[in-house]
Image 1 (spheres, rainbow, N blue to C red):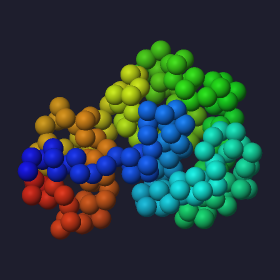
Image 2: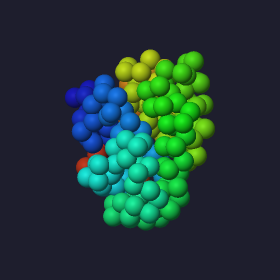
Image 3: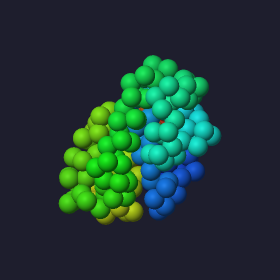
Image 4: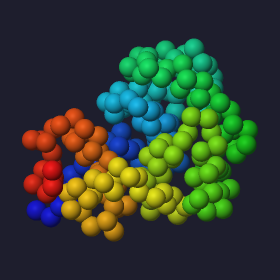
Length: 201
């Protein structure tokens, strides 16, 4: 089996969450999920918390603002996101307010960006949205948003080098490379790793 085929078995997180990133409403949901994934918290807790937002219908800026800080904290806690519950609730309120006030919507924000670097700059002006969240968000939008061209993360590049993947293919497989690192390497699940036969370690 080619290494590319082995890596392809790992879905991107947006696909795992059942999102269709060709749809504007799902791109917003992925933006929300990316903010949750970006904290120093397990992917399992981030996914569980995201699903709680879906269950509560908190899938638009308007619904998130209507819920208010206290309700957001409750939803975050119910997903296990307790370490960052207060700060994340506060950030989400500010992000949604600014998104609506300055741009109207995430799609309009994208339209106003002059290019890839400007898009990343704008996204990082939101409180609590740093380079990690922006990379998570944009890397799975490559090929759908022409301005979504983030530089591959250091984690993805190092993972590619570890398993001998051509560095020219890092962008194509970045989401899978990050998952390999987080879900197998860091957790020492070498025996179950789908690319263990290629690993140099």
